[in-house]
Length: 304
Length: 263
Image (cartoon, rainbow over all chains, first blue to last red; front, side, top):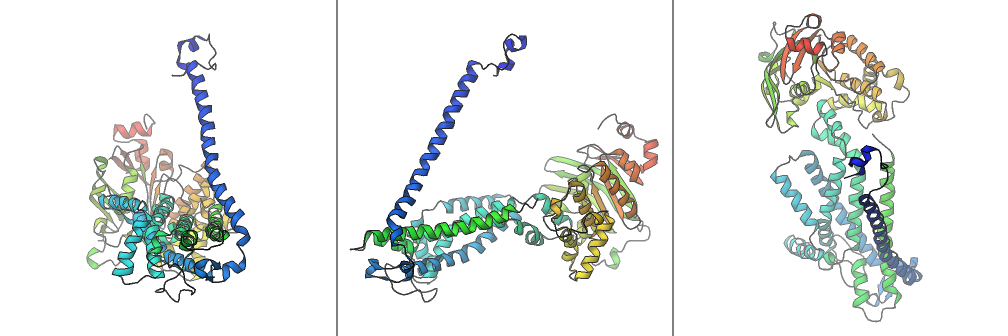
């Protein structure tokens, strides 16, 4: 109830703009909440800044070109991390190659072809649930499905496929949302012109949803680079001085390497885990930066 | 689309391009059109007037068989276009190519101006650059837009002004080489000067194609249409020669609407 509706205001005796007790209370609550939300937001920045600060402080001195390009020795206690870095690139590459096309295809179906019926709703629920499955469960699925059933063995391929399954829902959701952001009027115009659904998708919808597809790509890369559990049973090894010879070979991986040098290996110099962690974060951040740059370029050119 | 001998229009149907018989359209339990009958002749401008929600746009959708994309839309009755019952046409893409549609809100596709107009020919399989160039220039010229955009054909069609986009939409519809041009309240988002230019364009097109003009401006129908139908609440109240309708409509509701007593 505002003061405008109160009878005094209509009589013209009280000023319409003088705050009532109610409004004064509302205003102070509003002020308090605004400050509270700001404080929480700032608080959240602390761990992010602290992580990055500690890693740079402890790890940066060890981060040399030589560290990145030489092979590890002594179970990772000495030498560099080149085989782990290369292994991570392989696994991420396989994950991308599997989950991007599959995810984009599924998103196209859900956004452009599927009717709103129980089947579609079930699929949507399944996607949301798949996104919530813990990564260790994906790891067990990966062992069963890729390592044993499809007989990929413990390999880069099996690890990449496991990562792909894990990231698929993210790709689907982000792509579907960007497809749906393309105005319906464009589709109507094309259909009325005699274009098929696919012609419409190919000529109009897909070219204008690049930013969502890129977002999916960023998320795949970040999760694939960082996850440990799904790959440690499916393709990543504790220590190896060789680069993977092919898709069916095992490999070291950065995230698993970080896990082992921080917990399992004896006699590791104190800075090495920090340097490995810093490398991992830099890989993710630089991938992000590239994708964000392209996304901004795509979004920057206003199309309608 | 191959028209077989049996489906060839007969001599009497020759001057009728479009025939609507007992057409009813509903969305779920909401009825948009109930039992409408009329006929559109070749090379005429056929006006459809009536207040909002009288089923005009639904008719356009049914004609273009957009029920494929509108899952809750159900159509009964019969629409005969170019001698064929549209509900029996399997190649809907050919049907839609023969019918150019202009929407109330201009839709410049997020392509260059050139590609906007070249899209339909390309979908038909025209690949030669010189042919495409010729089509683009011809269609833009006929839509009275060529002079304004000929120096920037590569810029985005979706960023043109509203009036220019609407003329681009018309050029795009013309690039389909349509038998029938459907205009659905094309002037709703267009300034009066552009509206007059488009009206001149339409008068020039009458010789080559048939035009169905859905409009909420009764005077626009009077200026352009040879014959006019009055739709009200899903019903086709009256169809007549435009002048006859405006001078003395038979139905009281039509007279009231034309004189501005409602709607």
